Length: 220
Image 1 (cartoon, rainbow, N blue to C red):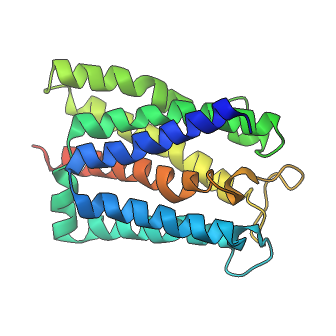
Image 2 (cartoon, rainbow, N blue to C red):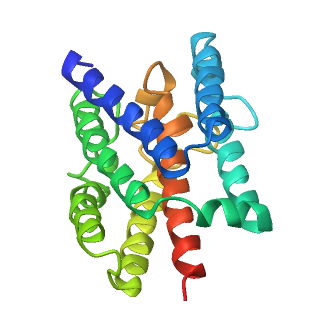
């Protein structure tokens, strides 16, 4: 991978952590993301994700714990209270990071490390979320009373785009559960620093959408 792609990826990582901090300003919450990222960095360095025939499939360990944690926040009342207190503008700005991520994935495809399906030339339209995020955030800054229905629709659509690419990526990761892109697997995220895409960046983006939806759902 080129130096510029590495720089863009690290920028996206910083934006993810900064967005989580700005939305809640909770040291412990930021610490969870940092600790999970460091743990997965250690595992990647030890070759944990290079094993492609292990059970349960290794990519499940990347995403499942953080996704389960976010679902737990939604299910528990204290968790919903925390989510609803997230700053809506910060939660929206966070999605800008999806633009550099998509550029990195496209470059990864050119390098033979990412399936074409997972780029904006394939079936990944997630870059639209990143491109539209500044416009939505700008309107929020100008008018805090931006139509609630519009924000709900935007977050739901962007969440669907996220789920689309993540599901395809999991099914393209070299493992016993791989059923997509068998001749062009998703190898980029097996190694540092790109392991932080599914371990840190994707959970941060998911958390931002879930928190926004909870906050908007609690607004009457």
